[in-house]
Amino acid sequence: MSSVAPSHASGTAAGTGTAARSVWTVVLCWITVLLEGYDLVVLGAIIPTLLKTHHLGMTAGDATTVATLSLVGVAIGAVLVGPLADRLGRRLLLIGSVVLFSVFTILVPLAGSVTVFAVLRLAAGVGLGACMPVSLTMMAEHMPAERRARASTLTMTGYHTGAVITSLLALQVTDNWQVLFYVLGAAGLVIAVVQWFRLPESAAFVRAKEATGTRRVPFTELLKPAYLRAGIGIWVASFMGLLLVYGLNTWLPKLMNDAGYPVPTAVTQLLILNVGGVAGLVLGGFVADRRGIKLTTLGWFAVSVVMLAALSVRMGSDLLLDTVVFLTGVFVFSAQVLVYAYVTNYYPASVRGTALGSASGIGRIGSIVGPSITGALVTAGVGHPWGFYFFAAVAALACLAVLTLPAHARGTEQEAVPEAVEPAV
View: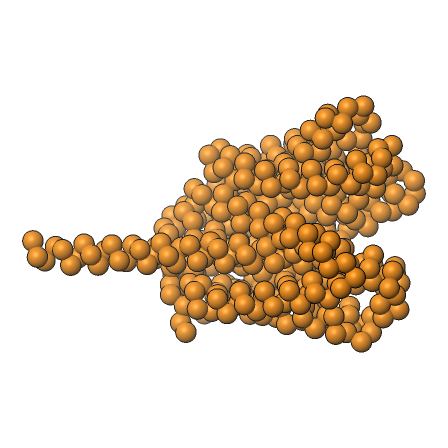
């Protein structure tokens, strides 16, 4: 009897410790994604103020350049971090990315020229772009394979939470826009410190490293026959998905206004769209884990085609309009994240970071292209209805890309979820 009791107590303590590390992984990865959501909205929130006050002599063209370079930096960071995370570890890369992003964010208000302002935003974007792929990878490897879609979609709710926080703070600080950057940078540094002491390394990465050693994992690994078919489908779907997300978030109010809806109604649709996005993320993850990620992603993009096409029609009922916009947010925003969920489930741990980084990086190109093409349609005076026809066509192309994806993962279903590895401090 006496020999059993200590063993039971030891097992209970170990279980408690594992649960605590599990909570830290979930919370810290979610907050990291929240920081990205905060950042990617902050520039849009302050551009009117920068132009009104002629800060550094900034023009509308300068503001466009700064915004574009910010997204370019995010794309670069997303592509670069994958191979490094597969070689050096998720934990170290995530902490380093948060620190890089936070330091350059704090420096942005101190810029003495538009050029320096843009360069600082580019550098901050590189760090920021690395954060989401690594956070999603860690969350996926923290979950059993049958719950990886849920892990990705629930993690991404942090993005929309961050966007809401930025919007609320921006209303409070008005002309004191510098506060938004100082708060973001300081919060990032605090999170990095907590991550150093509390964020465990991914056990799946540790096992993969023990099996393969510390060899470099190049991007060309994804071009091998074993992965090429899935890679092409993922890259196209991710490109189209982020094109839709950023195109809609940038131009929906203007397209609605061009359709004849009053400005307050048009602006309200953006809020409804993003509320639908949060609901879709929660719903999409649960459905995908039960019905299969590929099938759910395909269905989500297919419904998106219908919803986007429906928005090209002028609706006489506000309730009907709100419903269609809400459903558009439900399916469009979560369809993109389900592509990431497919990546985390399909690829083994040895190349998972590289694969997710490439999907995110190539998708970011779509985030630049989407607003540009839609803006050109608006400038030409055909934003409505052709903007929505364009979006519907993009969603249809995403459907075709998802159709080409293999249905079954390459061995990730065999991965267990053991105890995470304690950080070495």
